[in-house]
Image (cartoon, rainbow, N blue to C red):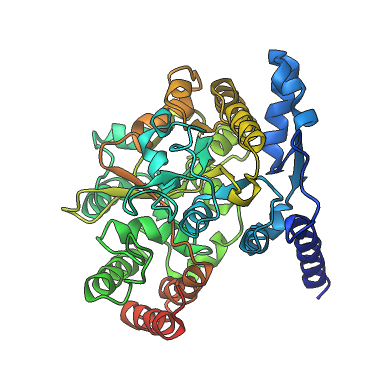
Amino acid sequence: MKAAKQIVGTLIAFSLLFCLGCGPGAEVPSRDTLTYTFDAPTRELISLLAKQARVKAYDDFDRQFKGLLVPESILPYEPFVLGLSTESKIPAILLLDAPWAQRYGSAGWLYELERTQVFAKAELAPAVAEAFSVASPRSPGRGAKELVAVPTYIKGNILFYRQDLLNRYKLAPPRNWEELKAICRKVMPQEKSLKYGLLLHPTNFMNDFYPIFWGYGGRVLDEANLLVAPLPDNVAAAVDALTDLRGLQGTVLPSPKELKQFEAPTTLRRAFYEGEALFMINWNTRLQDLKELILKGEGKAPGRLTAMDQIGVTPIPCRAGHPHRYSNIGSFGWGVNRFAVTHPRVIDLAKKFISLVADEQFQVLAAETLGQVPSLKSALAKVTNKEVLQVYRDAFASSDMVLRPRPQSRRINNVLEKYLGDVLYGQRSPQDAVAAAVKELTEAGGY
């Protein structure tokens, strides 16, 4: 109850903050100050650049740009919606998850960045540029997609694997699920430390399931953001993907009874580090976490990782014959609040802001210190961090890899999580879970 009151209180505080820009005669930011939302890594990197690079623009950052901290605990509640839907001018710059950029851009709440020459999409790695582009209602020619937020890094879920073990048995990383099963059948009986062929998240299951589902040819929403999950082909794709996953339990995947031990936040990477799993689906940023575990040398498990060259990465497998493999993009990007653009000075400052937080040296520093994969092609060319380059080369730059944001609607994601996650725990059949989810989505409507 206390936690709930704190969340409500925080949301009310943000409501008041956003409404400072609402209505006639309301207080608006000075033409010489730009408001923006921020996270801890951004502030850390700005501070490092001010000290190390001694670039005046970073040293003067806080004089021109007013940061508004959004607590991470309330991000799932999307506190920006209230401000944007009421045409608040504050904050002027928003740090947005890819599905939010899609939804807010489609609603006409974000300023188009490429057409207005704020940022050129061609500078971004193709894998990530598309995820932050939408068919904006304000764009000439409704079909053309406009960049509405600038991602400063690439983050998505990928397949981790024991590269040393696959090399030992002269096996290539799997492209499809049949190949993954064949590898597990060959390697697992001969490696005593391996308990599982594959680990994925039983909590927030949909984050891992979306790339699998897409790799079976399924979609929840179409290009116009209309609900297509109830269509027969998409229902069949969901049932087939869940049925195949269910069939792996107890041999490749943990059994329903074993799942509970993997519900805590760090358990998957820990089990992989300790040599218990041959494959793991996780965010690419976990490679940095595994590096830190190896450096610490914790634990005494006989099969635990001792060197980074034991780890390989590749896109999540698809169904045999499908042309693409997918990743559920987890990157955030900087978008400009369209309602804040009331004077040319605002967009000049926004352009300057984005040029600093999406700058090449900013992204290279983030790659070297935080293990982030840069979104700028020029930054990727200057990175020396081996693990960052490995993730980009072997996963995100794969010719058949598609980065795709999960559905924009939190309600859709919650409904699917509620029913489809039950399949792994043996509480519903794939057919029943998909039917129940489709029924609730269809009856609720409003997407």
